Amino acid sequence: MEAGENRFIYVDMEKCLGCKSCELACALSHANTDLYTAVLQGKHLQPRTSVVLGGDLVTPMQCRQCENAPCALVCPVGAIYQGDGLIKLKESVCIGCKLCSMVCPFGVIRMKIEVKKLGTRLLKKGKALKCDLCIEKAGRVEETACACIQACPTKAMYLVDLEEHRKRMLETRGKEAAQARTRLGQI
Image 1 (tube, one colour):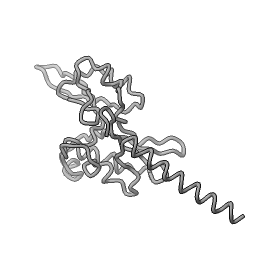
Image 2 (cartoon, one colour):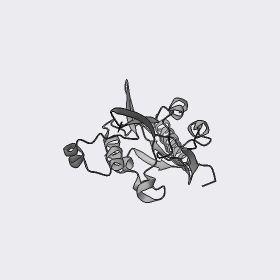
Image 3 (tube, one colour):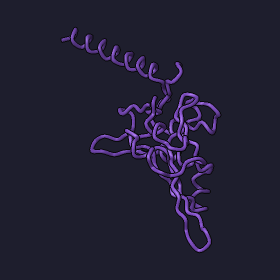
Image 4 (cartoon, helix red, strand yellow):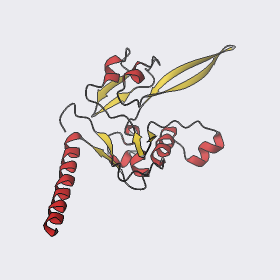
């Protein structure tokens, strides 16, 4: 993979059921717990992916790991940056200014609100949340580490780079053209 080319999660819309298994797996993975424990402890689960329902269309949405990512360009403290083939977010550096969320072309950067008690006052502070391709679990970007991909019951999600994606699409189109040609020959 060339420098600057980020991997991302591709969703095959023909296979996606909209079941939200990916959303739940993402939230549990980042909470470092299982569902039973999270419910018992009353944990607020926060996924970094979300399933968007729009008419007949259902699609999981997560960070597209953009090259020249607008979120990284506007972050005033460098909490969002490119490295190791993805756009990373260092939550401890994030000041919660929401600029990244406002410029994300896909609308997938969320803010989580942390509430801390400061004397008699409650202090609310936002922190950005975005898909990290579960790199914290594996130490590197790999499909087997992505909780959403592993949880998908129809295997509709893939971790790809742009060149892999192009090849996959060309193969699919080639097969479809061959099938169409065969059907035309039968008419």
